[in-house]
Image (tube, rainbow, N blue to C red; front, top):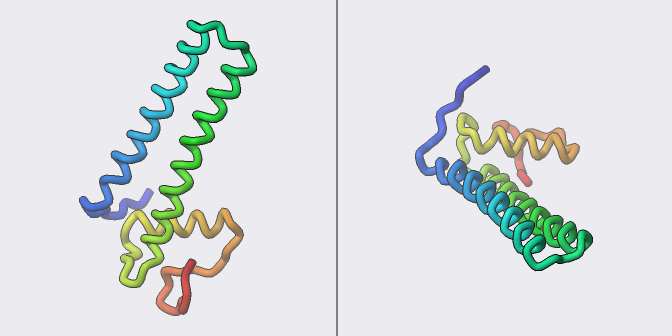
Length: 108
């Protein structure tokens, strides 16, 4: 396991992730209890829970896209956590070029 230093400015990502997780958990529990209290049909409860989870997944996706774009800006430091996450996103999307190598001419 290798440890990379993370700047204090990037710790907001940890707070954001925890906040999204808490928000999703609270939203799902509130929707479920409201649905049960007001006798919503099972389909309505499932739909509302699915939409709530989907909305939070979209929020996570937007945050990851922003994270990737920040990592690909000129002057991004490859010894930070952010570029390694960007590399993982590239590999997941099937891209093989390394936008953090000195020979890379373009990124993202």
